[in-house]
Amino acid sequence: MEREPFDAVVQRCGPMVLRVCWAVAGPDLAEDAWSETFLAALRAYPELPAGSNVEAWLVTIARNKAIDQLRAQSRRPAPTERLPEPARWEERDTQLDLWDALKRLTPRQREAVALHYLAGLPYAEVARLVGGNPAAARRAGADAIASLRSMLALAKEDESR
Image (tube, rainbow, N blue to C red; front, side):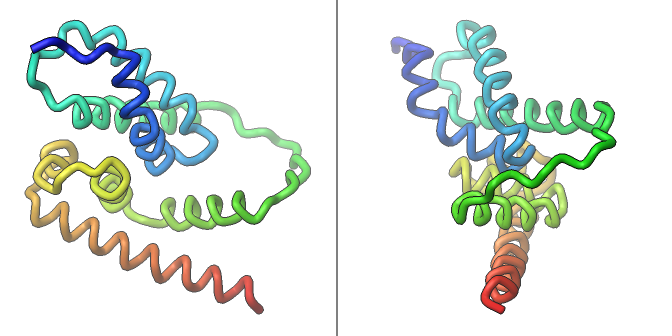
């Protein structure tokens, strides 16, 4: 069986990987995590065993690179001057509302959302990646979705006032 060309893998899986990076690391770090994911994958792709689940492999790398980006950001000094607020568009506001809600989830819930709902991995694979069993991963995902619905409904309610 011939291996799919790497550029085809990037085209096919790139959007999914970006969604995972965005959900784990946030909108500001997602693109860097995405780039790091595909750089690491490019180096390792020739050694990937035939028949491997490329999507799960990429999601694992993406999750790790997104976490690395968060760790690196926490080590950077924070700016002391307050920057002016950028112009805000309705779509950007919605993305920020979603990111604010995602940040309030537990790390396990956030990973369950990223891996199952955004990357499309089955709960058995989610459990393997984050630890635990499929039932716990399913519960974390369901709890996360319920929390997100509640938080986003409250945010929408606040906007309409």
